[in-house]
Image 1 (cartoon, rainbow, N blue to C red):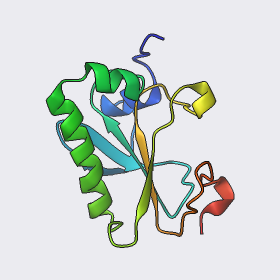
Image 2 (cartoon, rainbow, N blue to C red):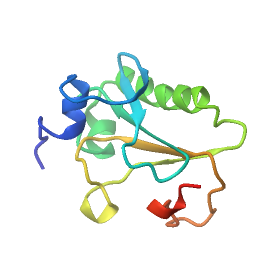
Image 3 (tube, rainbow, N blue to C red):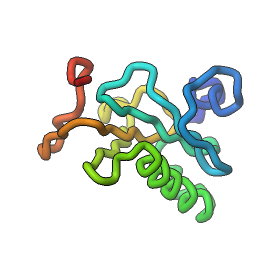
Image 4 (cartoon, rainbow, N blue to C red):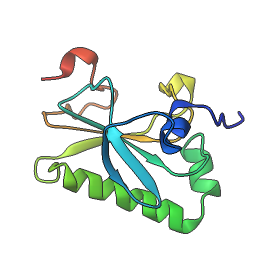
Length: 127
């Protein structure tokens, strides 16, 4: 798959589309999901052209990888999720549920999550 420079996250990163920003540094941008599936649902997107975690982890410079994952931790802390806990999800490919083919992680929090893998938040789980 070839990276699509017109995907929605690339356009947000370039400032062509608005977002409700939570955090930004040289490595990542974090913003609220427009269709939240939990009381807290934030996306963290690395800066750069990466389709999935596969090419991000293989091709991004070490500083980018470290900076991105540190940004994820900073965002969770900033959102006040550390004490009670939260879930981090990265979907890979169509069968993995990836809709935007720019690597990103979802941070879900603000409510009890099931320990069962595969039991992801659904639209009616917002409470």
